[in-house]
Image (cartoon, rainbow, N blue to C red; front, top):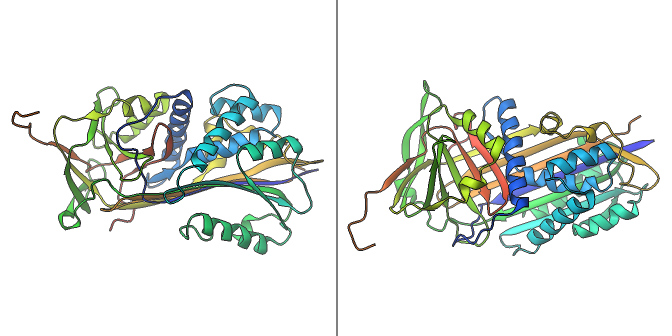
Length: 400
């Protein structure tokens, strides 16, 4: 009889970070994460009612690569495709090493951890256990037949790993007593703008929700030399905001047209955005940046989204090699995420779940370039690989 499996990705942050100096490298893995992330974001946008979405597809991809090592044949094929192709062992090895790399960052500004809770009635399959070791996963036993206690244990772990920023991601009703194993991924990051915005210059300004709707939002201002690029084919221009801490950058993608975000997302989902990101270069003059302060929170139904990007068999096909002497199948997948941008930095996070149930120069400088974020836009937090991205129409988000 197939038993319940729970996979969860937890991504949280207090202010994103940036590797100053542009020491980035273009990689095949980075390109894969880029394209898959934009595909997931596009589908999330299409499904969202208010069009404010923040997501961490990388967290989903890390857990999918771990799950793949014990999945059925058809599920393996679908997961390998979204992870960039190659053999199953290659995919697990590649993403396992990526997870190790992030796990070695200074925990003061980045924590990456995977936790596997195994029902006290089951044991992990040997091969899957070896893959878990590759991912540096901690493994503990838990009694899922007491859902409230199990949820409390998981929530304490989440609270500790995110330094109190996500306290209760799992409710009692999300724990099925038949659960055999639960996998959790935490990505926690924090940092500060390399040059902070001056709060005294923040003022109410117009934001165009669409061509007919204008609202007032608290808007920050910064006059600074920034990396910049524009792409006529994409229909957007981009800047990146530097942070003090080594690691990652925030990139703002501003469509040329007020109502241009859907078209930009459509094109980006086809080819990704890293090519444009790697084209970012000094603008040759100061950028006069205006961008709203905002906080976005969104919930993603991955049961609906993952099949649209090619992963559906995990919800149907039993995985024979996760636990010993039994099978599991994913029944529910979800993500809760947020991002907050203010004068000091950006805070971003997400909580993702996959749940399985029993089957039964000296010359005069040029004038500054205005980069006015006054209509729906896209943001990315990344280095050469996207960790988290989102888009906002501002109207229904929290502004402060």
